[in-house]
Amino acid sequence: MKTKMKMKKLLIASLLILGATTLFTSCSKDKVTDPVTPITPAPEENTIVITGNISSSTTWANNKTYILNGRVIVTSGTLTIQAGTVIKGRAGTNSNASSLIIARGAKIDAQGTPSSPIIFTSEADVIISGQIESPNLDASQTGLWGGVAILGYAPVSDLSGGAIGQLEGIPASVTEGAYGGSDVADNSGVFKYVSIRHGGTVYQPGKELNGLTLCGVGTGTEINHIEIIGNSDDGIEFFGGSVNLSSVIIYKGSDDGLDIDQSYSGTISNFIIFQGVNSDKAFEIDGPENAINPTGTFTIDSGYVVGDATNPFYAHFKSSAQGTMKNVYFTDFKIPAATSEGLWIATGSTQTNYDNNNLVITSNIFNISSLTIADITEGTTNDVKMTSNNTVGTSSNGVFNASVFTGWSLASSKGWLLGLN
Image (cartoon, rainbow, N blue to C red; front, side, top):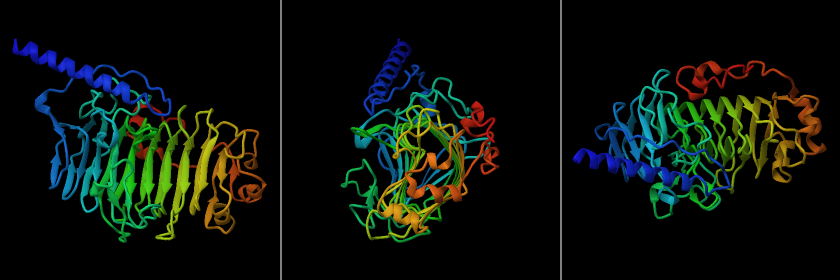
């Protein structure tokens, strides 16, 4: 009798989770997501539910599955996540949406390997350690939980707080949501061979969490071999900071692929962005938001961007954007039909930065059959310079190395990287 009652409770819990997931993925931007297959809960002895803050050094082992129940903030010490560990986020909304946040001064030590990646996913996912592909979810299922955020003491240029910002969706009363400072080399730990899937829960009407949010993260932090699958907001968003990223996959999110704000000054290299039917821009690039820390210049180098043939938005540069985009290959985009589409540079200070070579767009390749570069740039003001500094072609000329994703990424396992050239 006790066994039957326990199974009945587990079944009811599964149905409640499924219902909550369906509700919270349907209320933002009219995005459509496929229904989630009902889950079979993991055995209780192998599952640990994490609630509230983590205030001392802690290790999550790969023989357990960890459930994020609401907002979990590492306030001090180091959170160590063993290679092969699976972390699942519970459905929820508002500022307590299930997410993992590494506060300033704390550290993350999440070192997956090419054979044992660390996977963040939804509680609705029945995947277990040792698997790469989910048995029941696919990339079209988004917004099922929150996401991961890392906050540091590196410089930012925040509109409301000057040198200090507050993580979006986190109330000002939660002081652990603050980010930014003066330490360019700040170290928030290591985050590599990590796949983040099905995130982007709504925290305010019309606003969702990013797959990975990096706020004021410094160069002492190591972040590489990162995969973002099917997120409801941006794949990765930078709010200032100076951290460098390499070997990144962003697959068919519902907003921008890479989003840069607040004088981010690091380098993003060897990446691929796949646009989906609900995606917005591959890149949305903004500059500083005030006169504090206004000098940060980003570098985007060596990437491959695949459109979905219905999206005309390559990249938008605005709000005094400053930095360099080079060696990026764009293919399979819809032909732009308006000056605000294609590769667009905002008038005013951003245009001035481009004219004065503070914003550099060079050595990029556009696979645009029967079009010229002038057809995808905004206005005759930029046509000559864009055409002179970039090329049209059908090959990426090897700017992107897909081999670094073999073994650990869902994109590689699914064959999504095959045929890229």
